[in-house]
Image (cartoon, rainbow, N blue to C red):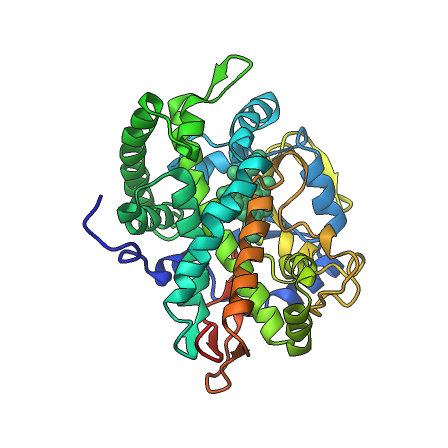
Length: 400
Ligand code: HEM
């Protein structure tokens, strides 16, 4: 895996493939769903499941893992990723999450912010800061979290592009399952060499941590290390790139709020929470019922697959006032379910916030006068399963 430049293999269209569904505005349907059909049977890429729309129902389901199991991921993502904490329940989930959470401890994150996140962000901005215009999706948001995860894992820089491409192909299973299986096998082979090397000679990276960590005398089985590594890039990169895109879009289409954030950087934190609520990067999570149960007054038998619509819950007007408005001063934005809730709540949420904060600060510092390019028509957020803008053409004063 070498011989190419860092981003040579990266193709935004690969990510766009996985957005499954060129949907511009699902929110009127979601509002109707919340009001009239709070649990609705829907076919999605040939698979039927019941979609759940209301905030209160999602919150309850996510916090009741005994009744609403995550093992359903075994029939989708699990096919290509192998065993991951995403698809585990109960004791197994608790123990294995404990092992990997060790590698995401806060101390490591603080070090990574200075040693890795900020330099990565600035390296990318160096490429266009002198030019007065850019497409921030192709030239920045799409590229930065992939590089950060690859560096955290300790993957050699000449392999980043290939690694990212395989990881994206892996989660394109809804579009091309064969491509997903091939990518899964190639990633296993690639990781197995690195895991062996790091076990012999540990470095300060995440693969070394995973290869050597022990809690209560338990070590992660190799297949689980590969599973976790296969999960990390899509979990950490596809999502964070979309969050930053949505945040930039929200601010640049509400320019008085952008001015406020530029002047007072403490507003980046609430702006991130509002972006997560307003356009949630991950729109659906899956669960399956383990017993007969009622949801929103409807009865369901054990074994019913459910799709929890995070994007619909985050615009629930019984929780968020005027929910379609982007408002960085919204008092309860942090109550969003964009990182889910309960035992599977996103393991990388602090990392995602740290990356997005560093990126936003650097963009505001280095691209003075940043605005959406008025010469370009119609940049907008799109997607069904994942949502973000496909382009962010911008102008700014060069030289930062
Ligand atoms: C804005 C960025 C992100 C969003 C919106 C997001 C969203 C989510 C959601 C909704 C879940 C729950 C899935 C479920 O319950 O079925 C989740 C779980 C997870 N996320 Fe994130 N994520 C983000 C960033 C990250 C990052 C940066 C990483 C790590 C590098 C990461 C790693 C994980 C892992 C490992 C899980 C599985 C946790 C478990 O099952 O216990 N995520 N994420």
